[in-house]
Image 1 (cartoon, rainbow, N blue to C red):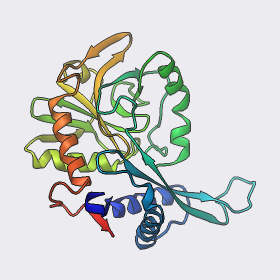
Image 2 (cartoon, rainbow, N blue to C red):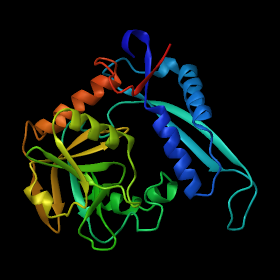
Image 3 (cartoon, rainbow, N blue to C red):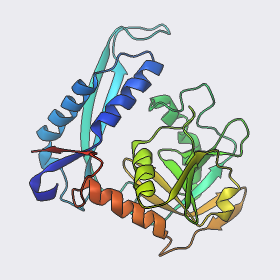
Length: 274
């Protein structure tokens, strides 16, 4: 909301992801143009709800759902595309303060060949039980492992995970079981531009023990530093400034200043609305 102009962040990327996901779910999807236009109309109709710079953001949630009359197991005969928006503060009540994760080794979020890479309701419904148990024990969220080997990191319930060791930042490769996050993709580009080496690969749970810092990325969290990870009763703490690692802080500042129009958008990621 810089000088009363509103900036959208990478709406075309979100449109393309919806199209890919819809195809996997046997749903028709709006074109990129229809999607972006609908986002613009919804945001402009609700511009009084856009928080002042630095006070939060307007979270945009597009939704595509089967709405035609069908009881059998088959794609619906008709669909509804809705966009709703809501002003939000920080996703985690801690803000840019470290979150505490627990590694889940019984429940799985996704399996190879499934729909783990699609932003579909089933992938969120399946994490609720593990998340509820974790929160009752005082953790912020759950970190899932792969369902086959039970040793490679996948993602947190609603965000992607990154592990920092020296100048190398590693993150699980997008192979069909994790969500191809747009913030994830953006952070990779920002990190590369800052001279970090970024590896998209299989990241084993053991690497958490050796890591300098760990952080999560997502639309709502942007970058969320991880203060501790508990795995099989063993807790690993990540120090840093009040638990906020120097790399996490640097990447968070770079991306948010770009999103808020305070830094030059040399990648053409933001779309300005009047």
